[in-house]
Image 1 (cartoon, helix red, strand yellow):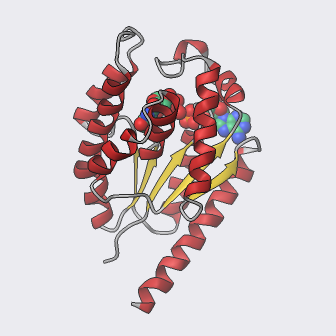
Image 2 (cartoon, protein in one colour; image 1 turned 135 degrees about the horizontal axis):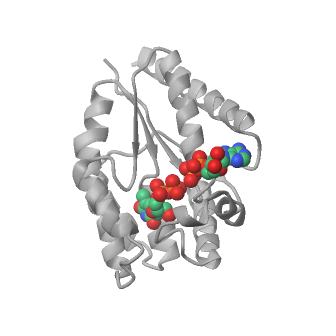
Length: 214
Ligand code: ADP
Ligand code: TYD
């Protein structure tokens, strides 16, 4: 049995990741594959506890490096407990945010630089996404889409912070053009999901061709 695809979604808060992930899950199941939906920070019992600590609006004293290490710790648990085993069973794993979020939000946004990539190389232990959809939406529009009472500690950061994060995502898109697919998220839900499905079909075809060539 071949390894499943590891698909991640990135982008500003409110850019439509959850909406598109639900659409993609239905598409994948319809094609006869098993899909595992998961999210970061979280995805495991330990990870969800870490998520509560990170996103708690009262934890205003949290050091940036503490924040980066907590995200990476949750990710290490998530990779070994959920993502790797599912991929080995041939399942398609769809993850709401992954290592690129840490590089954008902590590496660039918090100014921690390359240390964040290094920490995360340890955390993911060789398990990198096959494809990443970057939902590109002006953070200002994303913010408007999220109700004020639903905003967590990161979402409450100033708009300037979210603009830096968005520029970081654009840098990552340029750095990893083979893996990161930029998607214009300022369109209808249908238009966006059609484009995502087109890329997934392309990748599935490519994977089959690769397998036949082995
Ligand atoms: P995220 O998971 O990236 O925070 P969501 O999928 O939860 O984003 O979407 C945030 C809000 O925006 C939701 O109310 C959702 O219904 C709405 N939304 C999602 N996609 C679109 C779209 N293409 N156009 C307009 N509104 C959208
Ligand atoms: P989440 O609530 O899942 O985001 P969304 O509102 O897009 O569904 O994510 C919580 C916040 O954590 C979000 O603002 C982005 C941030 N984050 C990081 O700063 N670093 C990371 O490594 C991850 C995974 C998320």
